[in-house]
Length: 77
Image (cartoon, one colour):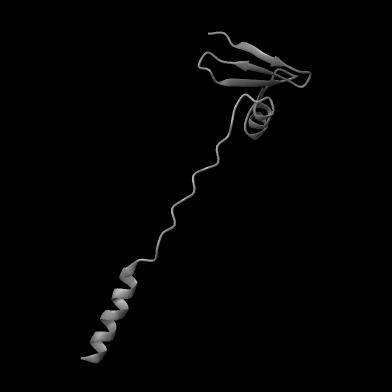
């Protein structure tokens, strides 16, 4: 499938691929990837970036407390 030209500037060209994703090429016709590509697509309003989901906070394991309590009982005996 051929790529469809979405926007062309002096610095880069943006194409839409057959699978609905975007390809960006610089003025020298070399592919642009990574953070630079994301910045270009964001500036053009073609994509949105969601913040990563926060990681769940792990609570302290109650097993540590149980070990301390068991140690106290042995000392009492």
